Amino acid sequence: MKKIICVALFMSSTSPIYADQSVITISEFPHETLSALAILQHWPVCSFSSSLGQVCRAYWEDKEPNGFLEVLVEGRLDEGYPKLVVEMTETVLDITVEDKWFYSFMVDQTGANEFQVVFTDDSLMGSYLARTEYTVIIEEDIATIREGATQTW
Image: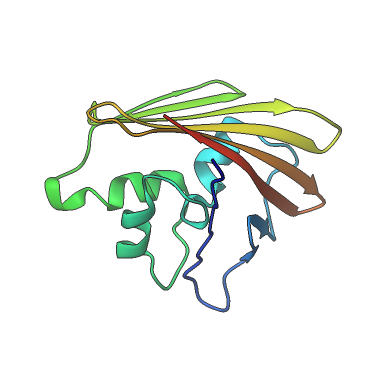
């Protein structure tokens, strides 16, 4: 079975993020290497397919959110501040939201300036589970993120 992945971006013309199919380029990327902290602060979650797509469309239709945490918190503020459990090492970022969703990023350096990122998006209350691989290349202050295959269960 073939799966087609579409990327839709909603942002202003002054945004530092651009898309060409499943490739995102972040200019002025403030990290020389890719770590869990860099993902937490700068991962363009609204630029890729994920369970957070509806939140992204509702709150950031015309701008880019300020990091992954803002997306997780902003979309749930109408219910009060969400309970987030964040566990982080240099190469792993695990976030559990309200014991309902689990997000994980695992980073593996595969070259001098190249990284493999595996993103797991898991509903702890339902049947949604997806795993997507990304290749990230950081050159000077530019990060290029290429979305790879997504597996769903």
